Image (cartoon, one colour):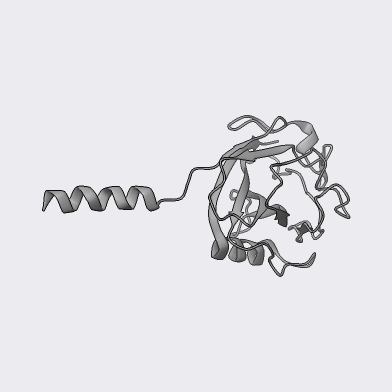
Length: 180
């Protein structure tokens, strides 16, 4: 019986997804966001620039990547999608600061941004309500088992999130904070 338990534990441990690594020069994990990553509008005055992001240690079988930035603390009942990008080619391991600008010219060929909760297909920075405790901004890179998701610029964050969870081989996140 003990041999079976130990060998079962080893099989389960080797079946778990490989841990990915994520980093950002502009958005260090656990730190306050820079003004560059703050929205310009809704009473906020920031640069509205998507952060630089790099990733490594991707799972075997990865065919593409996606990136999301999400605020689970937004007082909406469903959080707030600040950025969704899908169909990033499997060879890519980083995006430069500003890659989330409207039109997607700075994204890798084939990558598509979905619609944020600001209503645009572009990066939308942090802008929590005045007086709220600092919100969490979760920047996540997703390794996917498909090279293409049927997502366009009108796709909501909820739809993108659903598709990512259906195709994820692994993911890694970092969290920045911002309040006003």
